[in-house]
Image (cartoon, rainbow, N blue to C red; front, side):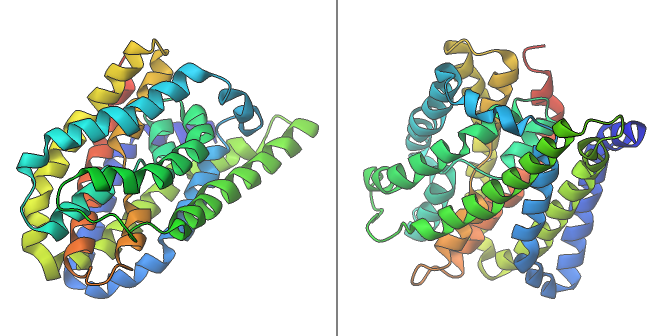
Amino acid sequence: MKNLRDALERRQIAIYLCTVLAAAALSRFFPATALLEEYVNAALAVMLFFTFLQVPVTEMGKILTEGRFLAALLVTNFIVLPLSIFLLLPLFPADPAIRLGILLVLLTPCIDYVVTFSHMGNADAQRLAAATPVLLLAQMLLLPVFLGLFPGIAASGLLRAGPFLHAFAVLILLPLVCAGLVQHKEKRKPSPFTAPDFLGIFCVPSTAVVLFCIIASVMPHIEPARDAALRAAPLFVIFALAAPALGWGVSRLFRTDAFAGRAIAFSAGTRNSLVVLSLAVSLPGAAPVLPAVIVTQTLVELAAELAYIRYIARWGQ
């Protein structure tokens, strides 16, 4: 079993790349793949369950007492990155809907699949998973404040707690509890052949399924507002390139170990796009521009994650 898991992990980049290309091609010829959107959360929950099995869930409570990592994570996501985005403001398109879409997605750190990608990128997924409740609460409180600081953006009435809390319950809490129960059972009855070891085989395949569902379901959203998507894309590329380096730099200032620093870099580069998308589509007059802009960020980010897994994994070694 270990040999199979090692083989899958060695070839994971090729597997993910082929998955992304297949999903993009399928959605081009069969726009009905947008219906896969209904299965994204279920696929994410399963993927995160397999990921949490690989980290010691029962020890996560201790991590929140390690103030240095948490402080670096919060400073990165809620001070350094918002300031950096403010400096990019002159490059933003003039269209208020495009500007709002860019800000909504770039100001909110990911609380779900970043855990899996950081685990695959030799980063501290355990600390990152433990910090998700703090990231969730901070972005819910600060997002309206941040939006109000950017000229031309009306922040009132934009934020609803529902999508954020639903994502946390379904994508973090439920898989975490299930993984914890499996690990607890294994501790009580240890054996050479353990369930976490066996189920670890499914980390890479489940991530490929998530990538396929996301790409195939979001691509059809771009076509109705292609111009807006193309205008926003360069900013998302700049962010994807710069954000991990900023996160890594903050981690060096706080003197975290390299393992934790890579987790902060992953968090910096990964945004809460799927949750923000469900929030954005509920806004009056949001379609088609706002969803197209947010979906574009998702596509850029997923492409960047493949590079992060390969290159951030080497930082600090």
